[in-house]
Length: 192
Image (cartoon, rainbow, N blue to C red; front, top):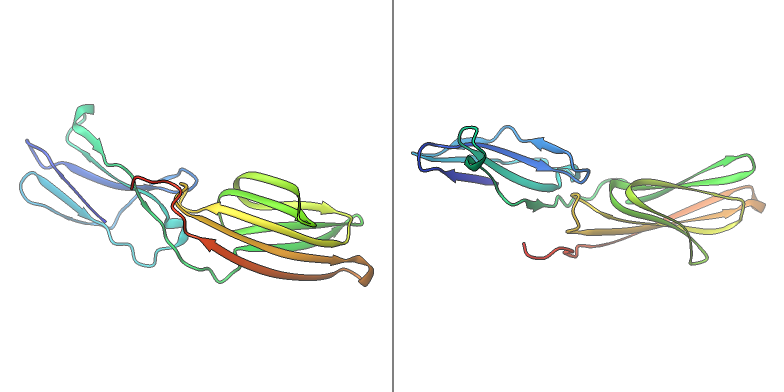
């Protein structure tokens, strides 16, 4: 990523930063600085990018302290697409006071929702910065947890996955989990 700014009186100072999915701002370091005359250039190369590096990247240029001498670029959405070694949706089980507690975990944590379904019917829904959702059930049967999240903090791409867990109490709690992954990289915002 390259940021370049010019000012009529002197070379501006530049700051590169990004805002991740949880709205946390991080100033970037380790960029190359160059430029001639009244033009400043910063070039940022990030090797080994991770999913947590997804977000909107900005260039902030300033000369002095006056508000009219400070300019921030529009955010450039950068989506890091990389498969993790772990499944996108994972279900775990625990027995507490005669009931089965299912916990659905989504990797990586992002903004979106988790749902639990039993016999195809929605039984629990959560919309927030999601990473896990618990379901307490005394019933045998097949349960599905669906995860739908946006990575990078903004709704540019959508990832979906679900896992199926089967509880058979009469056989002494047999847990058979199969993970199904499906992803769609659909732009949800236009104009970029």
